[in-house]
Image (tube, rainbow, N blue to C red; front, side):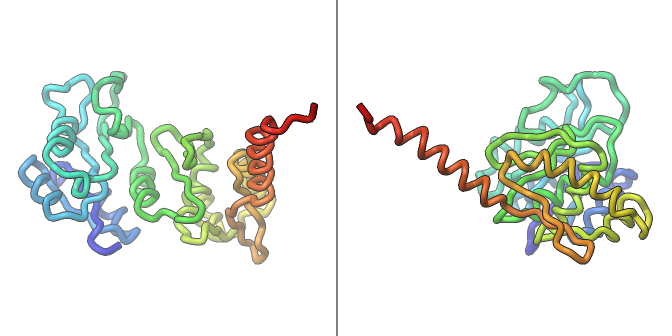
Length: 247
């Protein structure tokens, strides 16, 4: 990871700050802390800040919303090279207030209730990306988002399974590991996992991706080269065939 870090803006002794630091460090992600604009700017100026998590988010209180103020200041005063690529506001208390127009559209908002594990996965998914087959998980809307912008809704279990796929650089999972991480059991039945994998296959197929059984209780995500070839032929057919006249 080099000097890539996640900046957490929060009260230093808050429980949420400690949970975020513990969760991210367990995944091998370096974290730094700030609780005011001066320290935020100092960390960003030092470089390496890729993601900002701000717990000081209060919908419908723009005049005191530190998250929005920090984001706007950083956007105005730092070059694109230093500016963090992702910014998340964390609403830490229950509220029925809408988040519309409460923050820049470039800020992802985690509204209550939320899981700390989801926020940790949000960071890891953006830091540990696979170059050949790229998609990312959106924990805010419980979706998988593909490079061309299309997205598909996921169930909670599907989201967890794809999170495990994303933790592997080769996009592979093992049935036993899935059982321990999701169902807290070493004896998760093949039919249970296969049922969820089948649902994911249907959602991935239109995107040119497939989930194969690799043997030894392992599954892997890879490109569906047949579908890519079919799409290429269709593009050539629809764009170039009208050029020729058969009269």
